[in-house]
Image (spheres, one colour):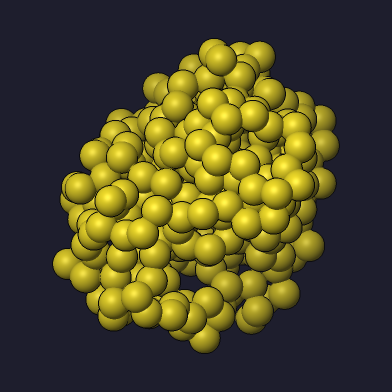
Length: 306
């Protein structure tokens, strides 16, 4: 029998188990994908802990995961445009991708370009569409100084590159270990900690036009103190601050579709966008994967491989 991640109560990583499950069956308009790689995301950890219960409650026993890449194993009635064996990437809204097999709506899949590694394809959806929505939300323009917090993380690393493609002058807040990667991608790095606001002002030549917060922990307030208008601040994580100050909180849901995913994987295939992969864990080590993710110092994405 195939295996999948399950948890039957809210809690720390110890509630996660890899168990045998019934093999899924494709219904009308659906495809069964044999998973080759599936990214993990901070939002999944928050759901597992019960921190998002009011917004996204879990039904137990719960599966986990949205991102995925793999090969088509079965076609449901009415599916066109795919064949068994096709290499695809996509997403599921059923919290089910951390598994060996997953049922996916055919409309939520795109073809995987042959030059895009499985790990990259399988980790692209949540981080990629979140970054896409965040950049779109602040209406980046050529020559503007735009600051990104958490600039080397799974989302932030994509945000800074998309901003550069839009012609912005990008300042990235990150730890020293990631400064060279940021420089290599045309981003001016700034270290977090005491004095960050002053370092940002210096790096941005005294003018910050927009701010994307991919980390939380007070960066919305910092952006406001730097003089950024609320309508040009987007946070993907600090929803309390967004409500309090009237800034934007546009993330994956604002761009969660196969069209955007196809555009992003196309940029990767063309060499215009890079998704760093921090670590790859076997599915059975899902607890360790989340332990590393929740330390919040990861450069790029962590991926599970069944």
